[in-house]
Image (cartoon, rainbow, N blue to C red):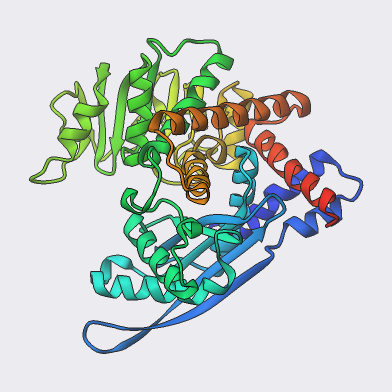
Length: 421
């Protein structure tokens, strides 16, 4: 039986709070271990066949000591109240570590969106945002996409809220289409951040990116853009996997050519069949983890690196594009091996950082250039990495715990200044 995500979040808070050893640490833990509020809504939707089906939705708002709640909305059959509570908690610390003025929020609807028509999906999306409208606004809580939600759904959210308030509330959601004043750079923001984190980690590990070898597990949007930027900076991509298997070429794979081939107009193909591969491992999605490389990018599912396989990993740097790819037991093993790890909520924060930039642009009625967005994003990722590194050296802990220490301490300081503790 897998660990409840909310219980996992509380365990991570407890560990960091104990290390920080505040005089009132029990009060700190009590304040951070529960969200400020969780809204549960019931959404009766008229389906295309005329029947009424009731869906359940949630919005969890964890902590707003540093600013408005911020976090995505996911549509998935497995969405639960505890899941969104945990995800909103992690968003508080993700935003804190990234140095952006947000707290943590998260929402979701328990639904299989693939089973809905476009009309049903739009009616459900609008009903959900009407239901949570009393607790969101550009100043209170700013949702964004997550699992199986996208810019089109954000456009429906924005439009529905704008009807309610009677004006164009541009800043109420982020990752909107560019036509509705979304931000340039949003499409590759997560991958760019993961790549920048890996570059900074390489410096700590003592090697140069030029000629460095890279393996990546997972080749979706975040994975592709991560290796695209690493490749541009001189690294060599030697192993790539997707859900069907792994392609290997120790002389290097071209990320753009591989992606163009995979996303062929006539049909979606697997990297396993890529003509530029020297070795093809059909059905083996784990192979990239075990390559002798300088940098490993887990960009697939959670729980891929465990106590059972951590010893087989030979990378000097791991930069996590996926959420939760490494278990706590594996963290300990990798830390003992001296692997430099950029944990998920540090490395893959590019999405929420550029969402913040979009919100800033919307609030000011301006639009930054793509170069400006990239420059500011890079600054945030570099800053969070080195704050984490300093905490690791000070407290003699693993990389992930160091990231939590930085993030939690910033929230605690804000709560103290505001008189909440």
